[in-house]
Every structure is written in structure tokens, then in C-alpha cells.
Length: 332
Image 1 (spheres, rainbow, N blue to C red):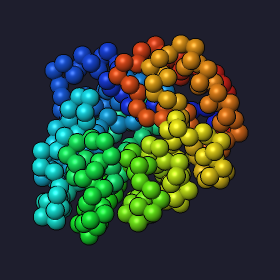
Image 2 (cartoon, rainbow, N blue to C red):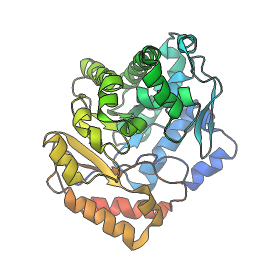
Image 3 (spheres, rainbow, N blue to C red):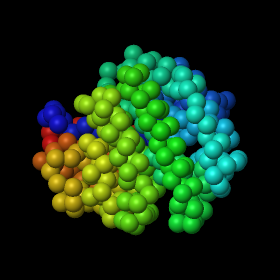
Image 4 (spheres, helix red, strand yellow):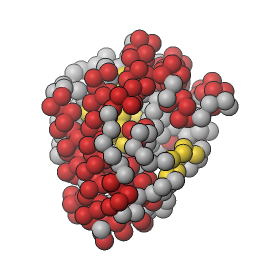
């Protein structure tokens, strides 16, 4: 990891729902329509770079984008997320996820190429992690504890494994499409795996995630790779062994404690509470300053949120946060 002139910052879900111009676009276009329109997706992706001066752009897509050609029928519902119209309940449903060519997702490649021409900062590609996507596919939408997913994992482990393996293959091919199209880094959002205990994570999830990072390293050894999970404290040591270069953490964990768990060589990204950014004012400044202080000297540190920007966030507070982080100097 290289020294940088200042602490870098970008924000999860930085492009979209809190930006007035994006809201105007959404009055006539659905989220998936934007995702499938390379010109529009690149425009939305570049908004935070142009407006706030963040240090990276992340492509505007959805976790479900790689499943568009799969036969899974879904919608993206505001304030809910993915809603699956034909959830996965048995091996026959898993078999529906047939093999398909990634050129059916050519709009993602086109978005990346257009975005690279629009911004002068690194472009981050991403995909959902296999466990997180399985949660939506099995439960049908976001739910408390994803009970149907946990039941399948425990009571139909063979079916669950086939689903996880198939999703892992899809994610690898999807991320390779992004890498081949020019992204400068990738982040895997396995958001919900932090709800698992250590044994369940090691038995049902870790090997699939490791296979994703190994495949990316084999394709491009120096490609920076980031892993994100909510509430991951109990499994951080295992995430650190997956082959990622940076661990993105939420606000429930302190940078000091995570550094003790994972050692000095891995980068850390995070971890301001999105609610505090939405609140703005002195509390936002104080919290961000404390995070920056705790990250001093931490190798490969990237400032970010502990989850996505809230829709009610004032863009002026995002600008203030970026300026605060940039003025803090070099911290790692």
C-alpha cells in the first residue's frame, strides 16, 4: 500500500437518493432503468465526484444486476430494496439460475468505460456477496434475520451449497467483466454475513468468498479488493483470511479493535455512522474527527461510512465531511 497526500474518502451509496439532481431523474426513470442506461448510470456515478470531490467513483448498479439475465424476476422497491417475485425454495428453483453469457450485461461494461472518461479518480466496481444475494433470493426481500435463508442453510445444506456455489460463479464472472472493462478496484458487499456465528460463517460462506478474491487475484494480482459486512466483529479474523486487501467496517466496531484483530498489513475502510452524517452539525464533525484520530498511522486507511448514505442526508453536510477529511492530512 502506497503513502498518499491526504486521507482518501468515498462514501457507500454516495451516488443517488440524497442528491437533488438524481431525484429529478428518478421522477421519470426507475432505478433499474438507470442501471441499464450506460449514459445515465455514468452520469449518476460521477455526480459525487463533481459535487463533493470524493476520491473515487463507484459504478451505479444494484446488487441484483448480475441476475438480470438469470430467470429470477425481481423489482427494486424504494425503502425496501430487492423484492423477488419467484423466490428460491428448493433445488429446482436453484436450477433455474442457468448459465448465461456476461455479454448480456454489456451495459455494465459500457457504463464503466464511459465513467472512466468522465472522472479523474479511481473507479470502483462491486458485487453483492453470495450469502447476501442468497438472503434476498430465498426470503424474497429484506427481512428481520432472514429466517427462510437460515432455515435452508441449516435444514437443506446441500441445496444451500449448490445455490452458494452457483452465485459465486456468477459473481466471479460479473466482477471479471468489470475488471476487464477498466475498474481500478472492486468491493464485495456481503452485507448480511455478519449476522452469522463463527461456525456458520466458516462452514457455509467463507470458502465461497475466498474463491471470489482468489479468482480476482489470478486475473489481476494488483487489483485492490475490499470486503464489507455489517456487524462483523465476531468474524473479522476470518474475513481477513479471505484474500481481500481492505476490510470495510461499520460503526459498531472501533478501528483500534479491528486493527488488533486483523494485524497491521490489511487496509481498513470506515466507519462513520450514516445517521450521524444525516444529523450533520457539530456531532458529525466531532465523530469524524475522532475516527480520523483513531486511524492515525493505520496503514491503508480509507474514510467511509459504516453503511450507505441515508436519503435524508443534506448534500452540504457531505461536502463538509469531504473537506474535513481532506484537511486532516496523511494518516496512513
